[in-house]
Length: 260
Image 1 (tube, helix red, strand yellow):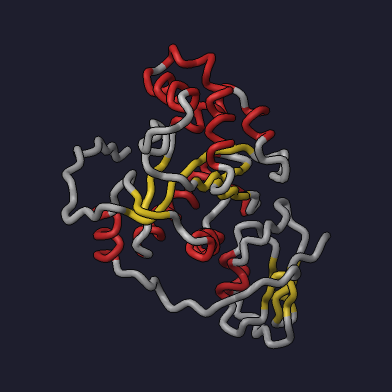
Image 2: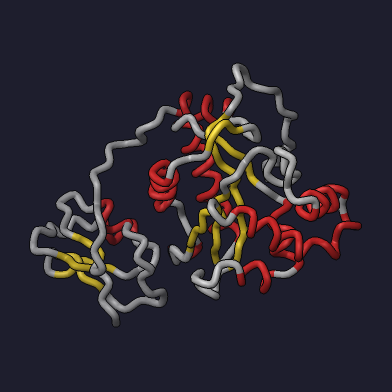
């Protein structure tokens, strides 16, 4: 068995770590928690470390463990954020590297399947035009599938002279998320969207740039030679400083819900 945890002598054997471990990787023996072989190996979720009242458990590979006291955001504040968040397509300037870095640091805590944490990001900025030309090279043979694709390819072929890009509008910065599964990229990018709103930033999720990944993944991933080859591009977020501010929410259709 490979040990994944460090358990100090401050452990009091309360058993909370055993109760929270879904892998059956811990037991209490001689009034102290110990690791054991189980049908499912430990996947370093850290629940045992997070619940230990004495801070006796840490992950063997280290990492910070900050104290948490309940949820720091009220349900009413969260609902207000979700309702007031808008897709932003008009920008007056780019984000700084520090601003984007703060956002990506915040979403480092987003969940991933099996806690793989196999997520990487690329920030498209100085190579924005190169990226647009690469997308157009992929989508050129697919322009008959949707008018937006033809608009974009024509825009690129025309020298990208107009301000409004059919894919990014006024946006000139992109955050691309790579993961093993779509959900592992989508969750942090949506969290980033909400975090951006709290920082006075904004943007929108791009569906059309992902069309290129669906049509020719090899060419698209060739633009990112340093990304883990096991990962794929599953989410793209256009970001910037909003040029316009919205002052009220907009109604949304009711969603059909089934309780079964």
